[in-house]
Image (cartoon, rainbow, N blue to C red; front, side, top):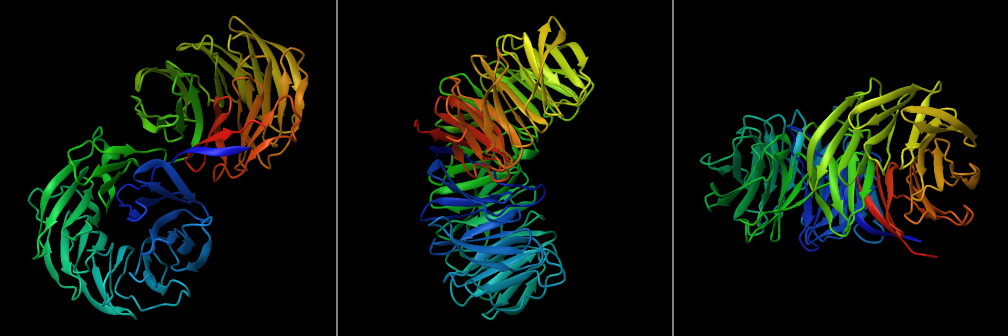
Length: 609
């Protein structure tokens, strides 16, 4: 049996020049955000506890709790809204096709009966309000000509709806059934976010013109604005009220968050400015915020979530982050506690500590894309899509000097000789390249299309896999490769080859869903019929005691086989990662760590049978 022990969550999806609207539930103290097709729950007081909803067919954009905390409405880029329960395996109540394009914001009414959604739509209305159980329309929303970025439902009766968007307008609707009442054009640029105060007396709009305007919630008339003195110097992307309706939190592209005191007459002045602890680059622009209970949450463009305590704003915030894109490789360092390094193709390397979680990003001097990645205690070796191999020295949390080796061809796979890690084998389309340190020892044309390779820890032998499914074993003498044997068993292109830790065996896997374990000395098949995946196998790992092999596949499953038992007595983790598993390793004899397309990293605990 394999049980999920730890989940290291992904970061929220962000987009340059756009805000993101995160939401939460004050009762359970959780927040919701979206990444890809997943909706992620994070608990502010328990950062390692994460839940994921992955039933959307298209990338999810926004999710909100119902007022009673029992239901969640989430929307995606196709204009679909799904309403599902927070308990009992997220049971689906209803699914509605609300708009014909992307939904940017949605909001519940206080009685939990109505939902309003806004966004892009082709030809039809850009805003729609409907009953949560039947989907029937409750009003007509005219008056917008471009994408509607945000909408809000007044939390007290008489109900009102306010919308704002890229046409610089703030529209006010009365109802139900809702109909157009009035429109304001006080903003001079995109209006990014609108929110009613919890007591239902005012609402505030913020925009890319660096302004925040406050209106009366019942009549819709403008009553005040946020002071320009000590104000934001960049677009304001999001706003959130405190629970007592006396303060608001705003975040901006100027990399700061500000807390404003809102007076009775509706004007706001800055009470405190929170600067983002970071390097000051583009990724530190703040794009989302939420004020919930005693927490102030801000989200940066790089996906880092900062948690401040509302009672003690001078304390350094807790940073939670992760990957935004497919985590395509991972490495476990032999330290105590175990350190896991993961990389995604956008060039981000994140450090996790088993039992603690997120432990920071490794900042490289040159942030190139990453395709293949290998790491030992003192060094990271990576290759991208530009024919270059990067060797970066590693000191604690910092990346040191980097050596760049141009091998003249696109790297397909790379492998380090663990006992002499300055020796590396890189496979290219036509053959392999041997590297020692930052020098190319030799480039060998093997005469067949190469897809995968591995080198033995002492650097005396290499195995190269081909497009034709054959494994070629070479002995390495100096800088030359001499073919020793060709092994045939696979029926598809080889995707991955790995030696066991004691080097007595090796395992290989192919794109035709089969894995094979071989004895190294006799070169005979030791364990076969490992045919339980339904798609290409992407990654493979050995347990430290050489008695188990784990495989991860495009079919979202991780399968663990025992070497001394037939393949049918396997342990299967179904649906380990939405979209496929791409990285796999053992942290100890009974713990497997995996990463995948959904940008998550998960740790599975195996129970000995």
